[in-house]
Image (cartoon, rainbow, N blue to C red; front, side, top):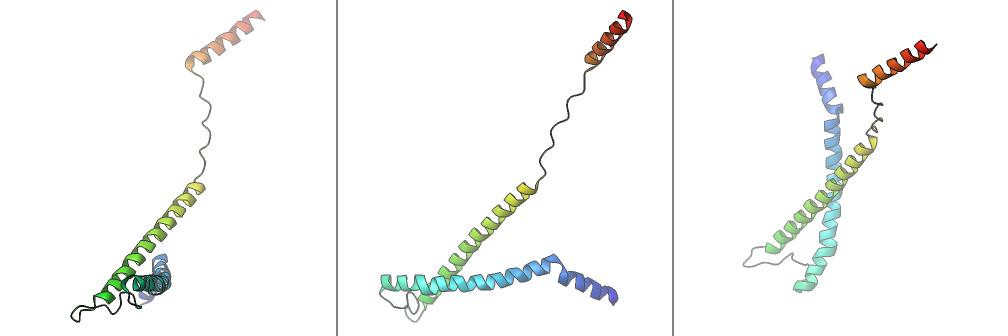
Length: 132
């Protein structure tokens, strides 16, 4: 039983669950923003265009409320687009941060002398020793 509670604690405290919870909370707040954008800005503009003060809402043909459906579709498309832009910006920021955290490459070590250079140095030393 201890193992079960330990696994549950690790799951509940683990990053994935917390990330999910934060995402749900931000999504709820973001939904209010998009709802306001649609309801307070786009619907009145559509109302001016279609001559209906409620925008598309309440528009119907033979009892079918297509206006409410169109408002929901507009809200969905705007929400998806805004989330796309938001996530794209976050991914770009993460990539820039990861790039800035990368260690700069160390300069290459000087090349080791070749065999010919070493033999030349030995020859010079021998010549100097023989002159003494």
